[in-house]
Length: 328
Image 1 (cartoon, rainbow, N blue to C red):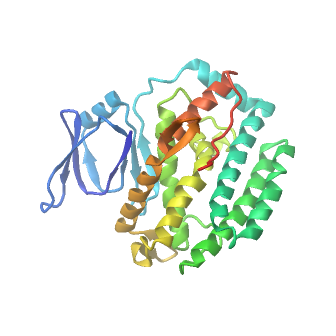
Image 2 (cartoon, rainbow, N blue to C red; image 1 turned 30 degrees about the vertical axis):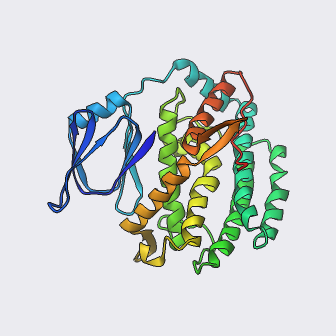
Image 3 (cartoon, helix red, strand yellow; image 1 turned 180 degrees about the vertical axis):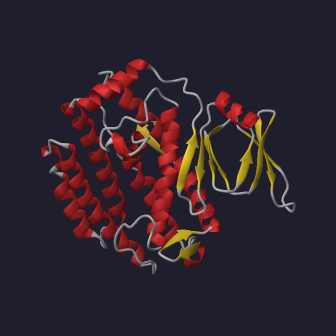
């Protein structure tokens, strides 16, 4: 199933079982996009949408995500939920409310995320050897923690050192990156990370939507801080091997250059062309296949969906949850 990205200003209508886009510019031709194999739609342009189109999205169970001019997330049209069950909701709440059960899941999410960070860095081990050693050492302390704030503190230390290594890697291509700064991003790499993470959060949310999981109940992140916090938990595992790998590919191959960014008074954002380059490479990465069972390869997007079902089986007591670790 594909994610559909819309960058053209205009009007969106339903036409048969397809999306019909009438561009605002008369120089562009109308577009018809069948929605049979579309899992979610992301709107980055100025569009008007009628109710008949929204009714079709409800029927096809396709969420519609909206983003502002700079790629910041605005909100989601979330079709009426058909997959939710009271049983899964109660199990999620039980595992959130019981600290012993909650921290078991939270630790496993972090262990998988750190494994995948190290996987990225080991491709550049001669450059970031010290950072790899530090992260491997501090990773071993995760099992000793008994509460969420302590876990998050360790995660913060690991991520700080991980981004320091990231700065060394992109610095070889004349990009400067010293630390993670959001709202607004302060340099080109921060702009790429912010944009990539925002897209990934919504891809994960779209996959959660296909299951009986409730996206508002999470285990590592506090549910009260974000409306949809489970997407943040699951995204932690995939950010290094999807978003960060895409950034390194774009920078190392000079596909994204400094002309693909728009400076503002207190920050910097990707331009429209820069966003297109990013999502083009992101989709290629999401379609890359990896082996999850012997002789069984699936795309990264399917792996994200599998992660949701693994979590459900854990909640039901059918198997212990083990976060995805990239071994490719």
